[in-house]
Length: 245
Image 1 (spheres, rainbow, N blue to C red):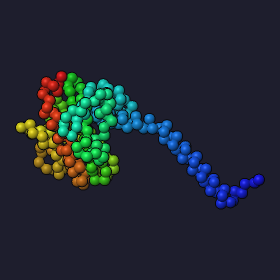
Image 2 (image 1 turned 90 degrees about the vertical axis):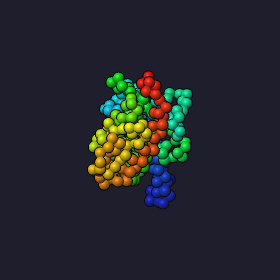
Image 3 (image 1 turned 135 degrees about the vertical axis):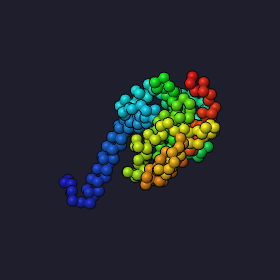
Image 4 (image 1 turned 45 degrees about the horizontal axis):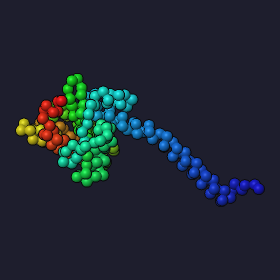
């Protein structure tokens, strides 16, 4: 019996068949590419952690360089206490997303990974931070040196901040300001690094915000204060000898 290709039934059956074929193909492609996508996401994170200690890496060599420079990790709870990890602590720390912790969990349940790195015979501590910009999430990685106070470098990123305005937090113009700044005052009290109005008084504890990107600057300022206060409390439990051993 000949098929009537002009009938409504044929059109409906053909449309359903195409949806099934296309949908199945997309699922197969998605599942096939998923391991590659996950690897790239992880390498991007490793790349940004390395950037915080001034080590350049590509997505291709980030994994190798991460193993070279990152020697240990600690996971802190909301009370700045180290959490016991029975598996590979570095691998576990890498699974923690500072932005997701901020967005999806109450403050008391958040976890704070701390990456311990070695470079040129010195030790560095990289603190992931996450918060809210103007349109969506902002996040970054801030490294302090062996004194647990002086910033050695910082790397920031965002989801959808405005190009030329808030998106400038992910440029060297903004990031390089952090190097050499102090997160504690002369009495050892935590003061964070404040993101202030551009052109204001210079300080060891402040960087210029983004002109025209006030809300993003405020978001970065808030996430630095909130997240680094957790790490600061942990640093105070560490003697200098403990930090360097």
